[in-house]
Image 1 (cartoon, rainbow, N blue to C red):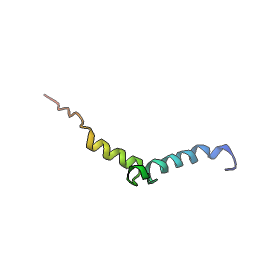
Image 2: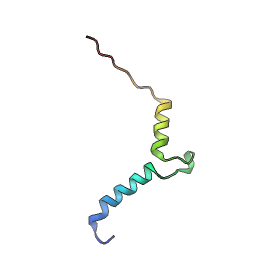
Image 3: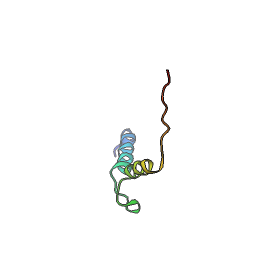
Image 4: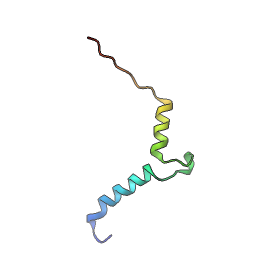
Length: 53
C-alpha cells in the first residue's frame, strides 16, 4: 500500500472476507457469519409482540 488513504477500505474488505467468506476449520469449515446465524436459529427464540386494538 502506497499511503494511508487505502488503509480503511483495505481493512474493511479484509474484515468482510474474514467473517463472511473464510472457511473456519474449527466450526465445520463454514464462514463465521454462517455459523453464528445457524447457532442463533437453533438456540434463540425471538419474542413475538402482537398489537392489540
